[in-house]
Structures are given as structure tokens and as C-alpha cells.
Length: 360
Image 1 (cartoon, one colour):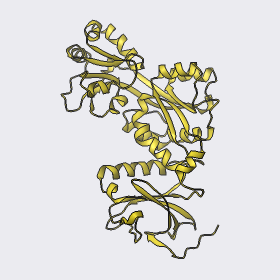
Image 2 (cartoon, one colour):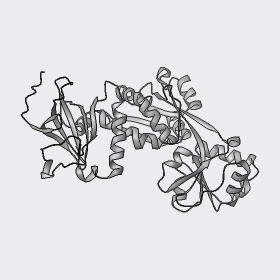
Image 3 (cartoon, helix red, strand yellow):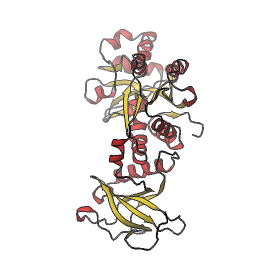
Image 4 (tube, one colour):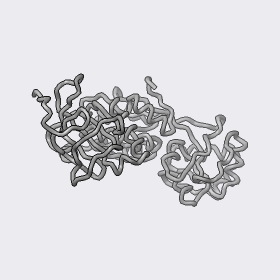
């Protein structure tokens, strides 16, 4: 199809806005013509963030980060991003009002992607199978805060993520439950590959995770820099929260035995079956939480006091792979492409992990 470059519609910078094709609580999406002189003749989708949202610095910062993540993706199931930015005194302007008469003044953000005919994205998603993931808790910050929004914004798939410790993931798989993608520690992934439950050729080493100590935000951070200081902090704590089923809790239980402080710590322990130990600190039930640094970072109201001392630290490596019987292999492949991208490497680092991707 040849796109006529005649300016028959209203303008937003170098884009001719033809019609509004969707809107929600924070944004409006238009079908538009790309009038940039260096761009091919084409129709695009222009997403404009509503003024009331885009004026908030934290919202704009998140939008910029998501746009940067999506622009780095290259996959046949992910819409290409052509342009993004923010309006301002020197930025693009528009003479087109938003639905309900809201004026799109300066101070908002925009994202320009491929235009995909066939209706609104939420309608397309209802016709398309979701991509289901079984995912280790340690990647919660990186995936939920950055990667999941970017993936769903640029692909026809909605992620359904089952956040569990690796032990719980392996138990559910042994019981016959499946998804499209699994993320687990490398030792468990070895078994899944050997048993051909996942496709070994799709396996990707993502990131390393280390253990740390969490406290309530605003509380004094105890000294955990040496083994002796670490022991004193644990013994002096009113209550220490750890996960019985998680890899961190299993390791911690053995560690306090080796350090000779198991009786003192367990007498005041808050042991949870699974989930985020930081929640017990945030609620005031404990004043120390033990878990992966990335998991502590995912709980609002919790601050990381520091990692375990090097002499007693343990590193968990997380891998991802596609199930051999994935119900949505195309969606799984698209999500794996994101997990292995340079954008993901940055997200892992920002989420308290150490990326193991070759380009990081």
C-alpha cells in the first residue's frame, strides 16, 4: 500500500494523526502517517500519554525506560518502535485534542510504533493465547518492573507469570504442570534439559543472584560486612524472617548451623513457606529479612542493609528455557528474545542481579 503524504489530518510533530484507535486511563493511540523526510511512506501508531500522567517525573522516567527497552527488541512477534520522546518547548506539538476534549499541551510523552491493522491490541490479545511463565522470585523486579511492561506494550501477548521458588516450580513440573517458559536455577535446569521437559537448545543463562540482609526502610542498617558482624546482627535481632522452601532459606538454615548460632536464631525466627521475606519486615513482624538481594528489593518499604559477607556468600545462577510442549511457542520465543537482549541485561543489573548475558 502506498501512503499519501498529503497533510489531510491534524499534526503531531512529523506525524499526521488520522484517527483515534484506542485509549485508556493514561494514553491515547492514533493511526497516523509518518511524514518524516527520511522515513519510508507508511502508517504508524502514535501513543500519546495524557497530560495528567506525563507531568509526573516518576511516570515520565518509567516511560522513557520502557521505550528504551522496547526499541532494542528485534523479533517478528514484537512491533518495531520508530520513535519516542517527550514534548516540550523544543519538542513536537499538536493541534489535535484528545478524546473528551482534553487538550494535549506541552509536557507529555509519546511512542511511535508499527501500525498493526485488525483492531485494538486488547481485542487482539483476547484472540491470542497468553504466554505463561513459571519464574523464580529473584527476577521479580527485573521482569515485573521493566521487561513485562515493555513486552506487553510491543507484542500481541499477555504474560501470565507464576512466581515461585525453584523448589516449588520443580514440584509443580513433576506433578505434570506446564507453561511456555521456565526460569530456574541452573542445577534444576540441568535436570529439565536432561529429561527433555524443556528444549535444551533454547536454554539461556540469564543472571547471578546473591544473598543479602533486608531491614525496614528508614531503620538503622546493621553491620553485616564481616562474618563476626553478621553473626552479631542475627543473634541481636528481635526476629529473623527467612523462607523454608526457597533456596535462600535452605542455605541459611545450614549456614547458621555451621556458624553455631542456630538455636538463638531459630528461637525467634519467622519462617515462611514461600514468598518474599521482606514483607515480614515491612509489616513489623521481623526486623531482619534473609533472601536474594533482588527479592528484597522487590518489596516496598524494605531497604537492603548489605550482602552476606564474601566468606559465607552463595551465588545462584538463573537460566531460562522453553518447554518442549509449550502451548504458545511463538510467544515463548518472543519472550526469550527479550530475556536475552541487551535491554534485559540492564534490567537485571537495576534489579539487584549480575547479568550473565554475553553482551552485558
